[in-house]
Structures are given as C-alpha cells and as structure tokens.
Image (cartoon, rainbow, N blue to C red):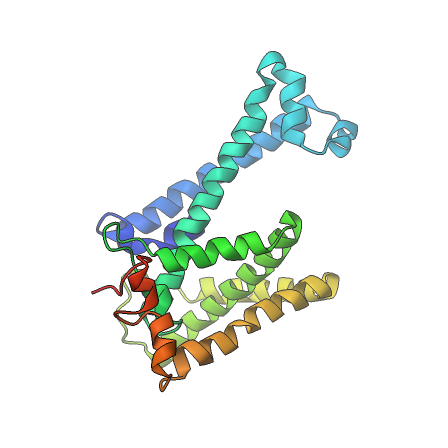
Amino acid sequence: FINPFSLLDRCVLSPYYVNLPRAIVISIPLVTSVYTFTNIAYFTAMSPQELLASNAVAVTFGEKLLGYFSWVMPVSVALSTFGGINGYLFTSSRLCFSGAREGHLPSLLAMIHVRRCTPIPALLVCVTVIMLVGDTYTLINYVSFINYLCYGVTVLGLLVLRWRRPALHRPIKVNLLVPVAYLVFWAFLLVFSFISEPVVCGVGVTIVLTGVPVFFLGVFWRSKPKCVHRLTGEPGSLPTAVGLGMPPS
C-alpha cells in the first residue's frame, strides 16, 4: 500500500505533504497488526506439521476452522491479488508517464487518453511486461530484486540532492539518519542477495540494463528521422491517430 500511495502524491487530497505522512503513519501499524494477528491465528489453530505440509496455509486454515464457509479464504486471496495488481498497474503506468513527461523515457509513454486522461501507452507497456513472464514465481523474484535495487538508488539520490541542492524546496523532509540507516541495511541485503541468488540478481540487473538502449534511442537521440517521430509521441503521430492518446498539454 505504501509504495503505490507514495507514487500518487499529486493525486492525494491537498495538502498532500500532510496527508501522505498521515496515511503512512496510520497504515504501517495497521497492516503490521493484521499480519501479526494472522500469523498468531495460524500457529494457534494449526500444528507445525500442518503448516509445513500445506501449499496454501490460509486455505488449510479455512478448511479446518470455517467448515462450509472455507470458500471465503480463497475468494479473499483472489480479491487481495486483484487489488494488488490493480494498484501496481495504476501506479506503475503513472510512474512511466511521469518519467516520459520529464524527458527520461520515450515521449510515447507521456501520452494520455483524450477523454479519460489516463496514460494508455504506459499502461499497455506495464501489462505487456507482466504477460511476457509466464512463471509467477520467477516474476516475483525478478521484480522484487529490481524494486529493491531501485529503492536503494532512489534513497541514494535523495542524499545526493541534499548535498548538491540544499536549498531545493522540500514539502516533506526527514532527518538524514533515516536514509543513511536505510542505505546501510540496503547494501548489506544487496550483497547477501548476490551471494545467495546470483542468477536471479544477474538477470534482474540485465533487465534494468535493457533500458539503456531504450533511453538512448528514445530520449538521448534528438535528431531522429520523421518516420521515428511518427511512431512515438509526437503530435499527429501514429498513436494519436489510432486513439491511444495525445501528448498532455
């Protein structure tokens, strides 16, 4: 919840620099309490052998305690999964949209729907990436490592900006001990991840590096032929003609 919410700070009711920390302070203890009490319920109602033998602990828990209403557990898991993927698509597409609007990604991803103002091209890119990976567990491993790597680089960027642009306007500002402590744990876990899962980490780094040629072709290369501009996000281009969207004003 926290990650998607922090990416939508401009969509939060004003003043977002008040409501965003308030939502984080409320949601973290709430989610932590729910997970803690859920695990307490599992360990109370089930033996260690049942926990180890179960492929889906929540379903086994429901079958043991809920009887005829055991179907509630798989339905709840399905709804939770749907909510999670909905939040991912909602925020990730807008993350790509913001990056393209700032010139960090191809301008095609900055296009929005004419009437609904949703980033259709960025949304399609995120959906395509999910569909290309058939194994869910592989997707979780790669995405988890990539997200963790990007989180650390982002926090490192915060320290760089504090040093190079100290007078920059910051509606939300924390003590430097917080990002420094995070980076210490981040570096330790990153090194441990490379030692324990070198293949997964190597593939994750490779996936990140595939964005380098995309950046050079779509952003850095300014003198592209007109045929390339027609396929990207320029006014009057192919995406505009087929109704995928138009550049934001």
